Length: 253
Image (cartoon, rainbow, N blue to C red):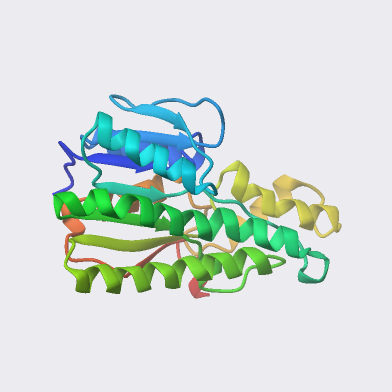
């Protein structure tokens, strides 16, 4: 039920971190993977290809989906992984910064759904997987803009899942909510604590955060990639509109 032979996947933000790991795992399961990132170059997953994409630009979405239709002929899986984080107090966050976070984290998913769904519907099925965060479920420290954006992803996912379910187009839509992930992006949240003098070093701050996980460590990219594979596969064929939390129990304390 986890095999993806003959299916085509698009994974955004795939140059590194969760996106890169998810692209490799989907490819290992048999999918042809188109990996994209705003970076001008990146590694193509085995049997797939890499393309540059600015997910905040709807024209880029139209171009990418058109190229997938021309070269692969179908699209079965969309992983909306590209995102950004802003660690900044609400009173010092500018409206321009707030809007940029929402452009990358929310508007990109809106564009992706609109661009990808018609091609998926041609095959009568598809899986859209949106990366949110536990900070779309609980409050993030000094992350008002980020939490607001990830909360929007959570509810956008549910609304589209209902709409597509009732439309009968066969497209499932779900969100994944990782806790702090041991990546460059995830560790960027440690800097304010070090700067404020709460921690002597990033290593001390990282160890403190690890101690907050009931399972004893940060989330790793493979933890999230495995859930993405589940949602992409027939193992989750009747799962839509749900939110899967991947945080080792971090958010239940």
